[in-house]
Image 1 (tube, rainbow, N blue to C red):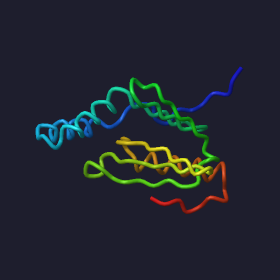
Image 2: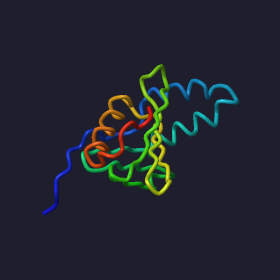
Image 3: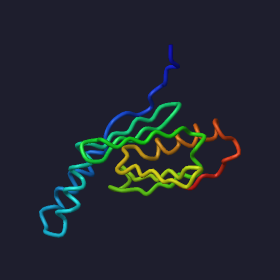
Image 4: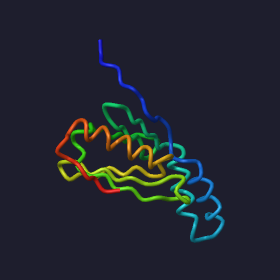
Length: 129
């Protein structure tokens, strides 16, 4: 019998990222941005629980990264879409970086992740925003 995880957020990237990129995609220079956004909308999924963060992405959602909070040493956010969504980069203890693009309600997600990091690793205080 496994330990149940409480899911904080489960879903894909913010729909505003897709809409904005498709509108920009009507220009020749914006086509790569639109294609990238469509791929993210189709196959990128986030699952943030009280125990771990899982990011599934890549072509047809074949790549998956799971990380527990005690492995995270730094979280950096960048607002997008007038602050409605944002990008996050999680830096792990071994130097690996995990990108989370177009996270909905990224400020609340950032706060939730920081609370979990502080609970699992009290020595890591003052993570960057």
